[in-house]
Image 1 (cartoon, one colour):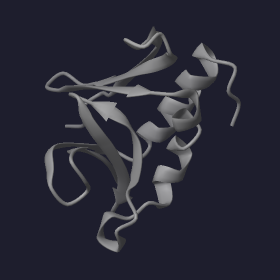
Image 2 (tube, rainbow, N blue to C red):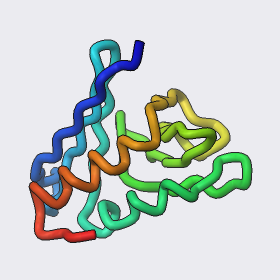
Image 3 (tube, rainbow, N blue to C red):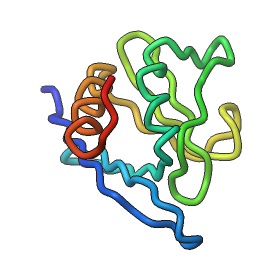
Length: 114
């Protein structure tokens, strides 16, 4: 059985008053919220070719107060949250096709076009 994954992008303002975005990715059994700036949103498509085993994950946004590292391998998108891509605290993995859903949501909710 394949879990259905949903994405939702909201506009936010951080504690310093800087505008940004909150990306919620969720299934029936888990949820992750990643806080991003507009330039970071533009990096998300590059996660398709970012390979963790080549030290190639991309630092894109923050989750749970720490850095979020994005990478793909064997058809899965992984978001690793922690100090760096090696000493992360938790990881959420989902089909890499979710990147398409994220990009569509970004285009719906912002002026960014891919």
